[in-house]
Image (cartoon, rainbow, N blue to C red; front, side):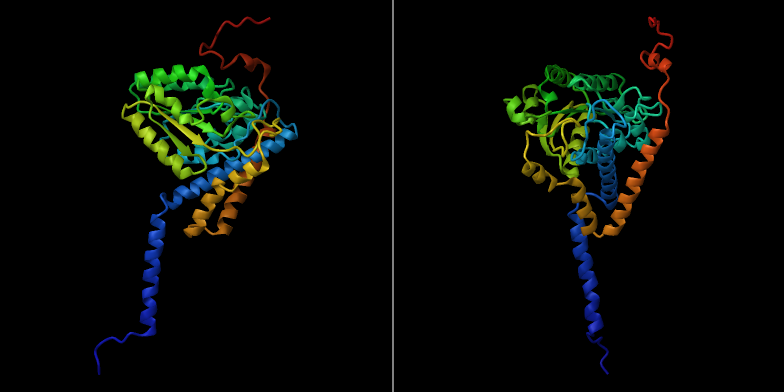
Length: 358
C-alpha cells in the first residue's frame, strides 16, 4: 500500500480558497483606507446630501427664510478632511456651511433648528443658514461677507501659534472669494509668520453664476500662492481619498512650523449658488458629467466591491440617515423662537455692556 497521499478532487479544491484569499488581499491592498473609514464616509456624505435636499424642500415650503446655499455635490471635501485632522483643529468657512458642523459631529437637530431661527440652534437662532457655529467642535462659523473669513482664519492660526498650541486651522472659501484683496494681504502675513493654516478653495467653478474663466486671468487657482512661495496644489474634490491625502500632508507641514498651504480643491455643486439661482449659465450636460463622478456612489461601489457591505446593508444606513434628518426637522419645528430680550446677549464678551436702549 502506498503511503503517499493521493491528489483527490477534494484536495485540489482546497487550493482554491487560498488562491481566492490572496486575490482578495491584493484587491484590499489597492484600497487606501480601511473598511471603517469608507463606512464613515458613506454615512457622513449621505447625511450631508439628505440634510441638504430636505433643506431645499423646506425652503421652498417657506419653513424658514433668508439666503440658503446648499452643499450638494461637494460632500467629498468634508468627508476626506474629517479623517485627516484632529478634533482639536479649527475650522472656519463661508456661507455654504450647513455640512461643516454635520461632519464635525454636531447633532443635525441643532443645525436644522438654526435654519429655522430657533433658540436651540447652533447660534441660538440668531445666525440662520449662513452663520453656523459650534464652539465645542472648534467651528468658528459660517460667514456671510465674501472672503471675510480668510483674514479671520489666519488670525485663529496666529493665536494658536502665539500660545504654542498644536492646532491647525482650515480656512475655507470659494473660487469667487479668491478674487478678494484680503486674500493677498493674508497670504503675505501667513507666509511671513509661518502660520499653521490650510487655505482651502472649494472651487465649484462658479462665483454665483460667473465662471472662473470670466473673472480671473489666473484660472489655475493654486498659482495664487506662487508669489508668496506658499506650497500649493490642485486636488480632485470629487475624491475623498485625494482630499484626505492633500489635507494630511498640509496639516503635517503646519504642525512642523513650516507654515501655510493653499489647496485648490476642484469640486462641483449640483444645485444653484443659492435657492434663487436659475442656473442658466451652465448646461445639463456639464452637470451630468459631474454627477457621474458622484463621491457617494464611488464610496458605495468600494464598500460593495470589497464585500465590506451589501447593497441591502447600505440601504439600511440610508434609511437610518433619512430618519435622523426627519427627527431634526421635528425638533426644529417644536423648538421655541428666541425672546426679544436675547437680542442683546452674545454680542460682546462684557456681560453688562452698556447698550443704548430706547
